[in-house]
Image 1 (cartoon, rainbow, N blue to C red):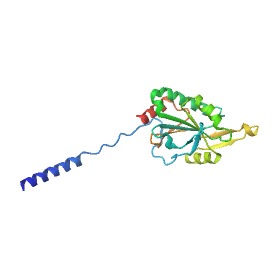
Image 2 (tube, one colour):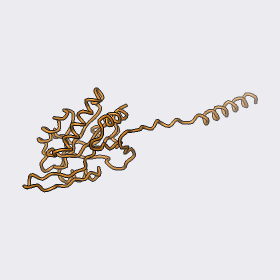
Image 3 (tube, rainbow, N blue to C red):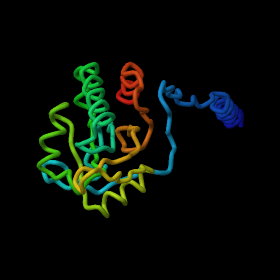
Length: 198
């Protein structure tokens, strides 16, 4: 009887000890940029890369993905953003191999596979240009809450495109985590990417 009572007391003391030990919550990641963690949009896409390969978000699992919507004939924000992404990759050093930059054209009428293949790798040979049909482009833009519109030029082919100029960042599991604003300091982007890469 004493043995049974002793075992019961040990069991109770173990239960008490277990209940007193609180589960430690994982440390919250504090980004310097705009945190989109938990957002319910920008879940996936179906487009073709500038090498002619069909792509979805799943293709980049295990990498941090930066996605920017623009067009090759953009005179200002697009080349500036791509140059900034190139600088970010340089500052990341060896960690840059775990980052995939995607340039999604909002001008599928002019931005052919060949043109994207000439334009995008100029900034970094690891960058990929993505394109789709006008219908695919519209579907992806809707899913990613990206706005774009044709602005007529002096001739039918000389139009420009108004478009959302921010970039999205996805973690290694393909979940949206950050919004990068145009002109955001490179140091802020590098800091936040390192958090996602760690």
